Each structure stands twice: as structure tokens, then as C-alpha cells.
Image (cartoon, rainbow, N blue to C red; front, side):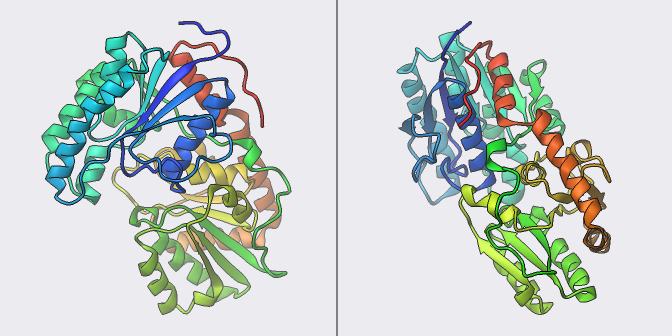
Length: 397
């Protein structure tokens, strides 16, 4: 396939946990992929079970196709309902048979997109962001694991290429025989326009205040309790410090209780959920940003927050895990600390507080790292290469 000016893409997301126009990390990931596709000249038909809200700037031209949501209530019935929706998706994709390729964000119960692409003789690209079967079983409810495995096998078998966001996700995908020889590691990226140099902070600190920050959904595997403990140590040594936590999630009440017990409530700003457009301004309000992941046995993430910290030119402290140890060169473009070690994290934060020149150097190198080869336009160019499309150069907005 060779297209000189424009591609027609069917983008599919049948995952109820991915509100396409929402504020979660998975939502921003989808928006950035879609936005880069549009900037590179593509016409995109978007099929999703979660299309609530208004498309953000840059996505107004998407052609929206809501997919039915499985019934609420009994988990087993919900799983069966999601499986049954494959027939509906097949019919709707066949109505878009003129598309040049189908791109799907892998979800637990969806195989129709990749099988339809194969039947139409079109490339089918399957993006895998997490070992969803294991994740569902561990953190939520998975009734029919065997059926979920069969769905994955069907989707991997039909796909032309499988795009994994990290080496760890790629290793999980490779455990399925049908995926062997099709796997490509394509990490997350950033959009430089969102993080201009000199951006005004949304909530600047008073003079002399050192600000530590975190952005993300408040979930147990993000290590917020470790961050709070580390900040308590830092604040105990120097009260001219504050913590900003940007985001919301199931751990919010637990974090608030921990802050109250430690007497830190007045030193911490918790924003709740914010629009993606506000995140750069919050990052500009920080001196140091943290990705305090605990010692997880299987760390498979390609953390969007870390790429954004780096794009904002922030000094970064992150746990020494998985993809992070490849992205971050400790003491060059960030600092790596032992996962779960609150004392070690506090020491790193204290070091950066006392060394503004070091903070600035780490931030400059972090920004240079992601701007050089980790942008969403580069990610989507790779996607088009895998789909064997030649498109117009990106149009900056």
C-alpha cells in the first residue's frame, strides 16, 4: 500500500476503562495517537465503547462510531455481553471497508477488529499497553480467564503487527504463540507544543518554597504512600517545602488520611482530576517531579507521566524499574532510587532541593532526551511505516 497524501484509518477501542475523551493516562495516550494521525493527514473513523464528552482541540475531524456497552451488573454476563459485541463491531467495520488499515487498542474481549482487517486484506495493527488478562485477574474481576486467553490468541493471530509499549509488555505478548514474529516495541511519547519553555505556573509557590510534584491516577501501584512518607521526612527537615498531587483515583481517601495523620495537610495541594490542557501548567508549578513506583514484581508500564515530566524540563526522581532504567540515565537526565525506599527518595529530594544547578542540568537533559526522539509524531510515523503507508509530513499546530 502506498498513499501519497492521505490515509483512511479505522481506530478501535472496545475497552470500557478507556474513556477516549477523558483525563486518565490511557485517555491521553489515545488522544495523542489520534491527534498525531490527524496531523499527518489521516482521515480517522473512531469506534469506541467510551465516547462520552467532547473531542479536544485537534480531534474535531474524527468520525465517531459509538459501540454498545455490555450490560452492568453480574461480571460473567458482562464478559459474555462484551464477547457478543464482536459481531456488531464486525458489521460496522465492514461498512468502512475502504479504510487503508485498522488500528486497535487491545482490550480483553475484542478480536473482531483484527479479524476483519485480515478478511478485508488490510493491515491490522494491535497496540498492547498492558498484560490485561493478568491485570484484570489481580486488580478487578475476571470470571472466564480461558475465554480471555482465546480472545488474545485470536487477535494476535489475525494482527499484521503487535505494538507493545515496553519490553516487559512485549515479553508477555510473546508468551502467546500466535504473536511470535509480529511484535514491535513502540514506547510512549510527548507532544512538544504542550510544553513550551517558560510556561507560566498554574500555582506558583511562595518565595523560597521548594515544590515536589506527582501527576497521575491515584492507584496503589503508583506508590503514593511512599511519596507521602518521603515528603514527610523532607518537610520535617525543612518546612519550606510543599507537595502537589495532580489527579484523582481510588487511593484518594487513603492518601488524605495518611497526610492528616502525618500533619501534612497544609503542606500539600491535591488538585483532583484536571483537564489534560492544565497538566503543563501544574508541572510548571513544580521544582521536582516524582514517579515513586513500589517494588512491583512485574513492572510493564511505559509511564506517560515520566515522559511529560521530562518534556517540561523538570528534574525527575523515579523508581529503578523496568523501562524507567532504560529511559533515565541516573545523574544525567534524572535520578533513580530503590523502589519502595522512602528514606532513599527523601534523600534524593533533599539533594535536589539543595542543588538548584543540578536540578536545572537534569531538567535540561531530560527535555533534550524526549524532544530528540520520543514525540507522538515519531510514534505515529512508526505506526504508518508498519502499516506500509507513506503520508504527508506532520502539520504543526
